[in-house]
Image (cartoon, rainbow, N blue to C red; front, side, top):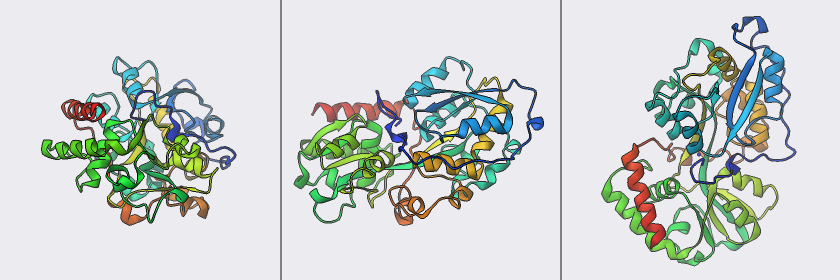
Length: 359
């Protein structure tokens, strides 16, 4: 899922050095089957969130040259397109921001006849609460928000949000994300509610929980909890799984878990913004991404979970059996995507967050 806070560094999608991408030898379409559109495509993506050879392979297969621009967070993506599409053909919004863009008529319906590789997706990803019927998007990669921790500094099993929200034994040794949506959503899961709850009484309970537990928090991290954990500044942190995976490769004492109460399970999606100058090329690119070899190459490079069932067949066990990438099914069943709840709810949660930070 951040995508979510000002100054976000896109570390959620950070590149894991030296992993490389799978070679891609595709014949998903001939050059002659493409439209008469100019052989160009403008792609607006997160930083370090593509396979090593993905764009070059697409150009080789289709003759379409891709220019990729980068955005730092969903707010920047939304603002860039709100006043009118400056020329992008494919974008990568996260689930709740995608829903916000759909409601604002900022993305186009997809022509599924031009996306035969959609069949490669795992059935659970062929529909979405934030885009019913997948009329406007296809999933790109997915992940979770959970707890990163230093194994030698904790006691017992770390499997609950309690260690971040209430347990005094870790006072002064933990970090929370400096992000209203993520922290409030995680607290809602901890107290047994949907992270999309809009009940004022429930949000009041969350506010009281967070204010009471604030004394235990050393720092509200601007999505750099993994660095604080790696340096020893904190022993536990709320973070995105990919960020913790990155430092886990460098330090065997670090680990990651999705709490048993559940958490946010975000999806980054491929969509075509309204006013895209080359929609045929955009469909060709999205279909190319859903090819199993392409998606496997991307997943191997960035080490986030692929929604592509056929791509998973090409991945090795170290990827497929890593619980930090693919949590246990019983935990996933308790996770949910964030939905766009409207500007009034967003404002209400921001006010809760302001009171928590000021307490």
